[in-house]
Length: 118
Length: 239
Image (cartoon, rainbow over all chains, first blue to last red; front, top):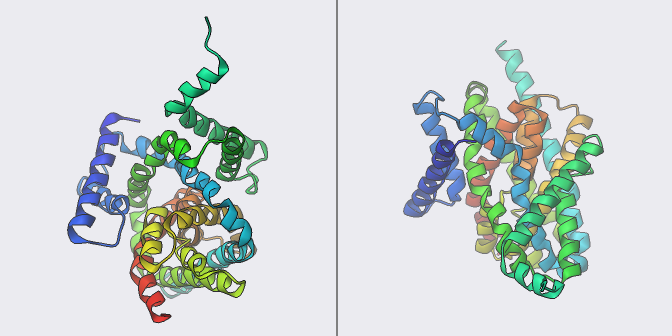
């Protein structure tokens, strides 16, 4: 992990935050920042020193960053116990169905595309 | 004279060090158990860490605000990590460019299905209106999801929790349903995980293959934007 690459990541996030506020876009700053870094990589032909290692290190531990928000469940234990059935119904089958159908549609269309243009 | 345990506890309560350290240890334990179980998806590291921390907070009588004042440093990593998703995306740019049409079709259908199934099933099983509206953006990455919930009349902080639960569900059962449906294309698997279970699904997709990870990150970002634009409009039709 290099300080240079971390600086670039934060500058991109910062630029993203400024852009979405300036233009009132319904996108969070970090997602816009992802776009900014993408353009930067395009402009530099992918050549940003230390970026591959730094980004790789962060992304390998991406799930760590979700833990504090997840612990927020303590503030809703009462509500979630009362309404466990609708919550479970929406989250479990809802999410599994969405993943299955989306993946299936993509693979189906990809197969057609590859047959049409081998 | 040595300090009493009580004094030590008072000191620890005032510094972010305690809950920051405990969060990292919980993550290490979650990861360790995940590896120990031979990467069994049911041993999701986030699930284990969150469950352990919730128990600790309850036993020690610590409120969430105190916990978060320490854990916020880990929470902050979400921003730069999201920006970093541009790197695998750039590495896969040729595959992405070839797949623009597929991306458009699966994003629109996946995004609509994730929101509609969430809200619809909650309504079917007697969820209250604020709960249904908090569930609708559950597949979107947390900062966008909270913004949407606020706009359509849900509870943003409840949405944040439901988003994490959805992510864990997707990371746990997503690969299983994709195997069942014989979806083997790494791009298809990535897009499906990213659309329905945002960053936690993306973290899981990264472990499956770099191509899956790149597509999951892209799908997560685009799904967030799409849902932010479409969901408030769809909800307004029901009013």
